Length: 120
Image 1 (cartoon, one colour):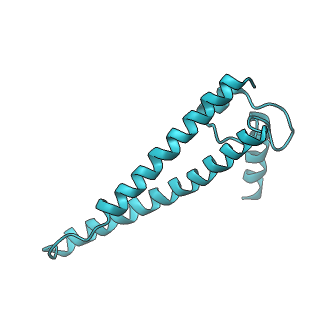
Image 2 (cartoon, helix red, strand yellow):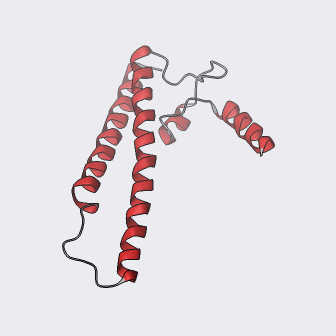
């Protein structure tokens, strides 16, 4: 992969990471703050708790994505970005555009998914 393409992926990953961190900060600073006063009825309280629970699950998924982004940025620095961790072949650039944190080529990913289906 050429340096220009690597720089593109690095910039996209850094931007995505920053966006995720900003959203997490917003959640902590505003969305999860207790509302002043008591909510008048149990339906309102229940709705608020459901929304908070959903938001926390979403932020947990984003936390995991931030970790994957950090690992991918490290692979860019190491020179192993875009190389399948299973077979050692290059991962198609179109796949990386869709999922820049991908560590497996399409073929190896399909094999992994087939094995997971059989394990169920």
